[in-house]
Length: 198
Image 1 (cartoon, rainbow, N blue to C red):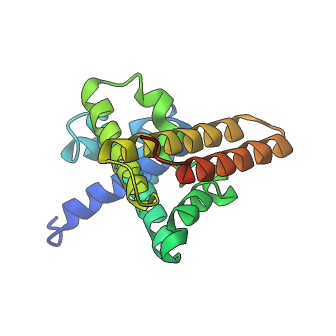
Image 2 (image 1 turned 180 degrees about the vertical axis):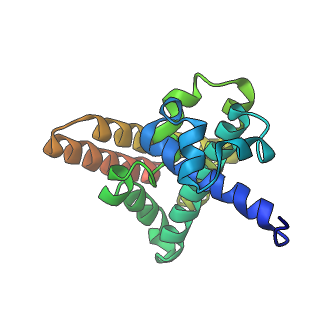
């Protein structure tokens, strides 16, 4: 059977999107290739026409998930007034919709513990995706500071928020989850407006 031009790339993208969703929702190790391909409406045997190994799928799906996380947060912050863009970013990241829906929420918060056990290439690519988010936060910070200072502060803000999302997802006490998220929101915004020092 002959397929239309671009069919293979579209199929590959569909697998990546489904994998990025399933990995975040269920965990990397809980997702088998057979069930993933079935979810994408494809046969198990067709997997290797698109990816050389499960490891390559994990690396690319993690990248895809982080790209989607950044795109969502860019969209949220770009619609805010100039001096409220970082606040919109923080509020968007820490919104209930974002932290409660693991399948479509932050890929960093959902996948970091498992990615830490993956191979070097996967970890490198995942780190690059995280760094793109951190660099965007550094662009949203108030004026001042050198490039390294801005990145350092952006790392601290993102680490605070990502950790809070992970903790809020762990607890079964919704009031505690809300306190964790509110603490992170307050901390991230306070840190963002702290002086740059010497």
